[in-house]
Length: 204
Image 1 (cartoon, rainbow, N blue to C red):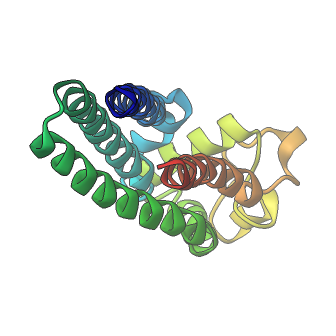
Image 2: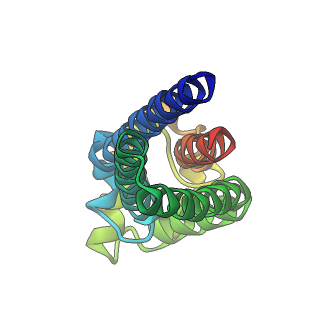
């Protein structure tokens, strides 16, 4: 009698925990969708493919979120129906997702430093080719209008080697380079991704 009650308790605890995993999958999927539809991201992504890493990471999060939802569903069904096959599949997939999330989160946390130089190169190229490449000009205009900045490292003087300072550089922002603002924007997105991935990996 007592043993049967213990099994029943464990079964419903398994169901409860798997329902939480399913909700976690919904949350991760939601974060991925938010990154994908973020208006500030689309403002820059439409001008260049060099920073589409944000979209790539968003798709990865969406895929992981969907898989966790599927795993949670399998776990719930396995617990209720007491299916050893479903539960074995659940634990195997759970371990795989744990490893992926942990690795993905660590990569996102470490990649922030390497992306700093990458963002500087994007801005420098945008300034150097502003008057010879329409796409680079459109990208710099978007960045300078969005962040209220000018140039890449020195402000309006970055354009001294090309031609005149663009109209997207407002005189009030001549001394405010875009390097810090642009990197902080990318860094904040990677911080969210790293926090979500590592946080859910620890939880799992």
